[in-house]
Image (cartoon, rainbow, N blue to C red; front, side):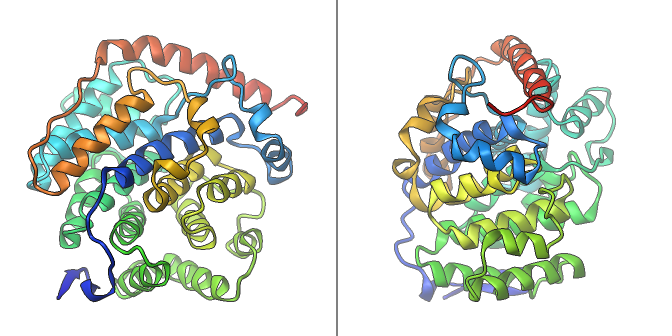
Length: 369
């Protein structure tokens, strides 16, 4: 049996066990949170500077008394998960409930978060059409797409419309929508195919026959060909034009994340360390790469010392684990409900996050000791 997805198919004959244990959804959400918190302190650093950080990752990951906070990529991921729990039946209902959560989130003083997402929430509060909100930075849209792709791995024909509904809440650029769809397909293939070669084959068969823009298609072909030659990740990134660090635009983020995913498939530690080691927008790249690796390996393969250093509330690691359990139930058409979330706590959390973010930016101009 084959399942249609865009211009090609997902081949059921290639897949192993399609039972999607909560551990894989938990690996996705917790993996994103851990990667985000590790990448956030050095976001914007050059590759040379960040290389020293990676070598001393355990000792230097101490933003607040040896604990780490997550950026808005993780927040966008769990907002998408909550929206899917509430309204996954059709794209318009999903967009409405996701937009409502973005409005509430924008009222919680997310001053240190991605401006595009905050602006979209404010525009929606003012009664403007969410579809008119645009911008260049797309970490939040890509994070939401990652969750959508994993959730609809059983029903890949739904992925494009759901990604479009999510992306158009914050971005009008068609390139952002296409890039988000590519990330969603990577998540769906990772969730659906346990075999690495089947997963990668189906990913490229799907995206390269879907009519994505020429620049993105050329980057993906280059990544596919170079990974077949076992080319080093850093050399692939250099060929993609990101030698100075991964840029903020989707044309830089998505190829870099796909290259990391292929080079370190299912190896969480290597995926996150190498995504940070590339420099640039390390919080987004590490969050996305960590999420993809987490789908494959589950929470058990994420270093426990890294998980222990994530301090978040009200979206704690325990809360994200509960959310993953409900998300797994909902994806299998089992009754599910959202775990309780204390929204009034977000303003205080966001003020702390702002102070931490400013500390990181000041630290950028100081020597790495």
